[in-house]
Length: 310
Image (cartoon, rainbow, N blue to C red; front, side):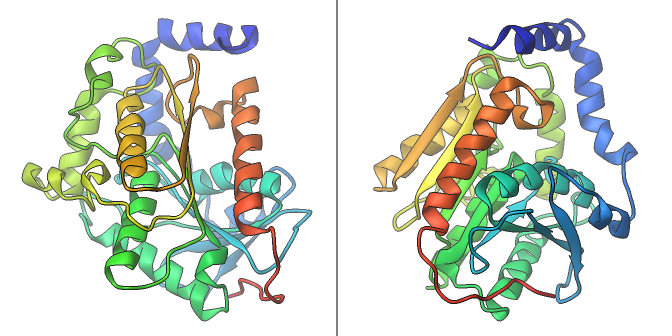
């Protein structure tokens, strides 16, 4: 069960569900800072620095304490592929990076519907290549993504595998969006429970992402529940059991385990979509668990002293 403090906040969110769904969908468009301002923020004790060796706006997040300089968390932000910016990305990856004691890199990919798939995947590949150019080994890269960013993290790993390249060392996914056709049971059973997501708005965003062609929802690079995950690295999934996308995580876990992946899923009682950003007791516990997982997967041994640099 959620803590009493979290439950009070959740009750308020659910009693004003329409308001919070509207705020959730519009906040990223209303709140923004110049990239230089985002870099200057002190978020969870991390410092930021813009990277100029990248085709899209990208930011290095440096925790106060770093266990090793040769491992990096590559963060892919959420926003249903139609919204999001460096400010949002900085707020999500900073506490995870600080908890893992690993530097992070996040970026602002092109957004649909102006830039439909595969623009987001192309941008993710370009940032990943930048890390490789700067000496980071693939097995020392951890992919971290929430919601649509979790979808993008999986698509990036699938694309690398299809091209015969070595995969990153770990995936950490926060409420990943993996079933764009909304075939999962939770889209029906939790429709009136989820305090922040609206299935109709998600459907519109999904159609914008694929350029209006719903047939593409069955493409494994767009709806990863249809993918083959053979050879994937260790994966940790965090999801609230009161969110529309619960089935997305459940089906993803089943598919990964079917293909022999070392995958675990943590279901957080009563929690909404990407609850890690709300400051609940469960938010901090989830971030702590992610940090332990990523640190163990990426920082347990050193391979030189190579920095992610501009």
